[in-house]
Amino acid sequence: MEQNDNAGSQSEVMISLRDLHVSYGDREILHGISFDVVRGETMVILGGSGSGKSTLLRTLVGLQKPSSGEIWLRGKNIAAISHSEMDEIRKKIGMSFQGSALFGSLTVGENVALPLREHTELEDSTIDIILRLKLDQVGLAGFEDYMPAELSGGMKKRAAVARALAMDPEILFFDEPSAGLDPIIAAGVDQLILELKRAFHMTIIVVTHELASAFLIADRMVLVDKGSVVAIGSADEMRASTHPRVRQFLDRVPEPAVSGEMDYLQMLTADRKTDKKRGA
Ligand SMILES: Nc1ncnc2c1ncn2[C@@H]1O[C@H](COP(=O)(O)OP(=O)(O)OP(=O)(O)O)[C@@H](O)[C@H]1O
Image (cartoon, rainbow, N blue to C red; front, side, top):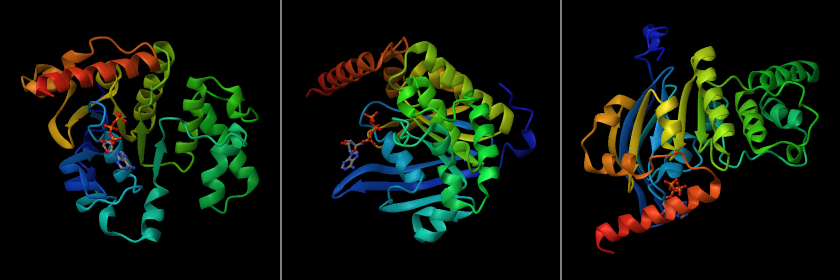
């Protein structure tokens, strides 16, 4: 791992979570989450289905308000700021959603250009240069005039990443980047994440339950179980952990899932096994 090439900035905290509680209505989903992410680090949020990973990610990007606790991002506690302040911060974070979330009626290029048109006063010619650059960075040079429906699943993911990169974010968030992709295409998305880290020293937060992917891309990982942090550490520390929940999670799926359907079935059976152990 290239831990030393940006050692000077390694200790700069980019995101800090303090005792974060998040509820949907009366039901609390996250029960006091605390951890830091430092600049240039790739932090993977791991956890079984329903553990609260997506809720945590949605809260980190300001789509969900916490019921209490703090999220420090770029020197502001986003749990307690106004909408307009949050809009400013959002410009500096990029988000790649699980289903890519491309607008089907816009070309790939128009999708990538969207944040620039929304948030900047840049001229069309400049936007055109930037969008080509971003598509080039994700290996999609020349695809600006394609419609999303004309792209494969892996290409859609790349296009979504290009759009997330449009505003030159300091922090990139990925929700299940390899969901629904076959293993070879998923490995390509993992490589893209590694390249973004190497080339731009980006701070990257990835939610996944794909262990192979997590161990490949993570500098550190945090295991969330039933809305609480069970363990946090490097890949080696996690592998060596004797914590029963860590072992249960890591030993559960020895192979990367081969497809979205397999993934789904594994989640179902894993839940059932957990329920049986709980005596349900
Ligand atoms: N908008 C919502 N309204 C009410 N409950 C929700 C909402 N979104 C999620 N939940 C509930 O919160 C819990 C955590 O869901 P979340 O999607 O954060 O888990 P996850 O770890 O990302 O799971 P998965 O891997 O299956 O996506 C689940 O019990 C879910 O039913």
